[in-house]
Length: 367
Image (cartoon, rainbow, N blue to C red; front, side, top):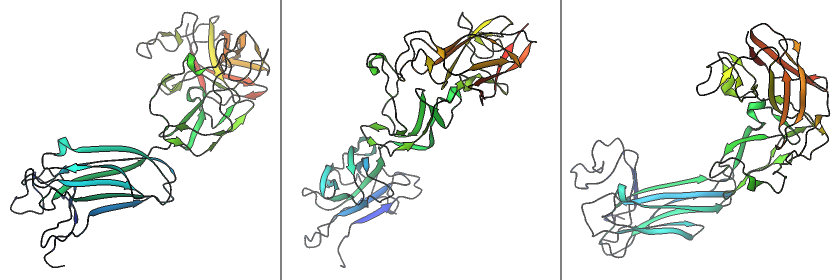
C-alpha cells in the first residue's frame, strides 16, 4: 500500500495553539483543542484509487439494555488552509440505515459546526456507525473534527430510590394512599407540581406495588416497593433541622410555624406556649371513619380508625382532630393543644395502633 493515504483517527494532545499537533510547520491551521478527535478521510489520489471511509462502530452491549438512546455529535473542518476545496461527507447509521448526514466544509468551524441529535430506539447488538468520507466535489481527503456521544434516555429508578415522602420520614416502605418520592435517571423531561388536570374528578393517579416510570424515552425496569397498611410519619422537612435539632412542622392558626423566632429567613415563626392550638400533618396513618377511597380528595371530616396518641415533652397533648385532611388526598391532619411545659426544646412523640412512631422530632416551647 506504499504511496497511498489511508484513513486515520487521531486525538489531539495538550495543544497550546490552534494548530494541528502533528504538524511541525503549522501548515494545517486548525480549530483544534486538547482531547479533540480528528479524522483524515479516505483519499483517492495516486491513481484515483479510493481506499475506503474512516469509520467507528458501536455495538450496544447487553449491559446497556434496550431502550431509547440519544445519538448526538458535531462535525467541523479541522483544517482551514484549503478554503472551499475539500468538502468531506459524514453519515451516522444504525444497522446500516442512515439517521443523520451532512457535509463538513472548510467554512465550518467549532463555533459553526454541523451538529445533530437524534433519539433512536436501540436493542442489544444494534450497530451504530459513523462514516466520514471524501465528498465527490473534493480534490482529496482532509482532516475533519468529529464528536459522537451516545447516551440512554430510558428512565431508571436507582437502588433505594423509592421512598415515602422525605419530609414525612422518607421510609423505605410506604402505606396505602400515601405520597411517595422516586429518584433515578431520565425520569422526566421537565418538572412541575400536581394540578387539577391530573385528577379525574376526585381521583388521583395511583401506583401499584411494582412501580415503573414511563416518559417519551421509554419505560424503566420495574422497582418493587413494600406497601404497608400503616407507615406513619409527621411532616418535618429537612429545612427544619436547625442547630442539630429536627423540629416538626407545627403550624399556628395564623400560618406561623413553631420554630425558634427568626430561625429561618423569610419564615414567620415563634415558640409555642402551653394552651396554644397547633396543626400537624402526616402520611401513612391508615384508614379513617367515615372512609375515603385511596387517591381521592377527602370530602368530609373523619377520624382515624386506629388509636392515636401524641405527647410533647413526655406530657400527653389533647387531640382535637386526627384524620384525613379535607380537600387533600393521602394527607392527614392533627389539631392538638400544647400541654403545660417548661420553656425549651420538647420531644414530640406519637403512637398509632399501639406502635410508637420512629421519627425523632421536637417542638420549641416558650414562656
